[in-house]
Length: 166
Image 1 (spheres, rainbow, N blue to C red):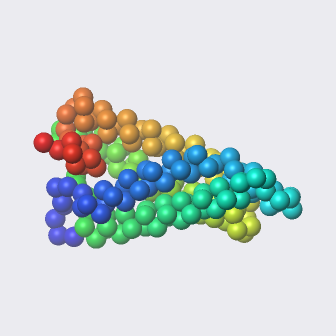
Image 2 (spheres, helix red, strand yellow):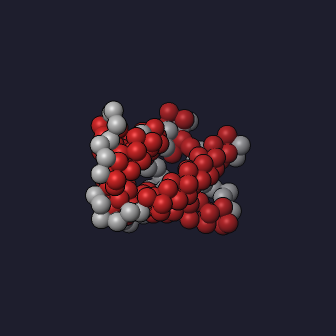
């Protein structure tokens, strides 16, 4: 990377929204996954459509993993836009920490979920804790983007929603 880009690449934006959508699917299919894991751990047969919904959860978890790895590759290869003009050093630091924490939490979720699903280790409690952390990080990330876009009017949200660009 020779210089910092002014905008995200189209592929970075698409991957961002794929991860966003996949996380919502994960939250929707959380309960069937928990019931399926409990059934598998006790030697019982998962009830109803729980196993199907569990496989949906696994598929979307895998999608998140590959999309995050691709996003990290693109970030290292092509960079990401800097913070908006007028961003204080403290705000910039917080934004950077939240972004990297999101990547770590997402990868941690996939690892703990995959290890539990495959019977390598029962990391369900850690997976649950990471889910809480992820929810808090997403809330902070979204709130900051909305605040910056509509209160500070600095174009932050428009970086990931090109139709908002002027």
